[in-house]
Amino acid sequence: MKTRQRIAGVSALILVAVVLAGCPPHSKLYRGFSEVEQEHFNKASREIFPNDVRTDLARYRSSKVAWPGFVTDAQWLAKGDGFEVKFKIEHHYYDWILDYSIQKEKIFLSPRGEGKLETSCPSKPGQESQVLGMVGHLVIIYGVPLNVEQGVVSLTCDFASTINRKWVRTDAFDYGRPGEPVKFLNVPGPGAGTVLKKNPPQ
Image 1: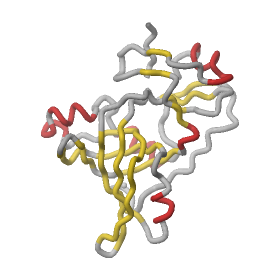
Image 2: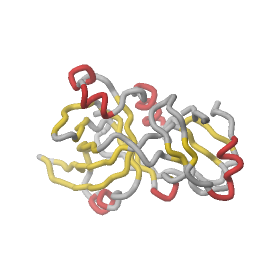
Image 3: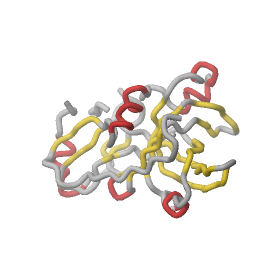
Image 4: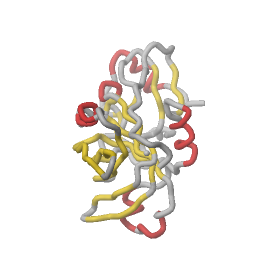
């Protein structure tokens, strides 16, 4: 079976408008869609997962992670003189590959992941409708684990990158952590030949 290679720094929640269309067929490593996100991406470990933190929180309290998942709930709350958004997130495995081909979707998450996450990100006045509209969309949280309560891992929100659900698919590849086997679940559209036979990203 084939193995696929798989906000403290900001004053407000960063809502990233991602443009993923119009590129020739290729695959590349996800590194973020802004210079600020790239800095967080480069500093974060992608080899630490929520279950690692559940098993040994003390070990990872100072470790910066990058965890992707779908927003299941978003609350916009007043806090002191400002505002914050509290996210509930369902983690999904991501191989950190962007697949550019004929198919619309560019991010192929696994249908599986490592459970529930929570974080609170600073927000600004006027962002309430934008925040509440994020439910169901993909978010990548860069932060440090804080706590585990009833199986939910809380982490800081050093940076949050949101990606519209239309660019994401979860029914094409079933995979877990790096090095684990990949199961092909479905043919991902008219670009299947490129996606399934592509070379590892450069």
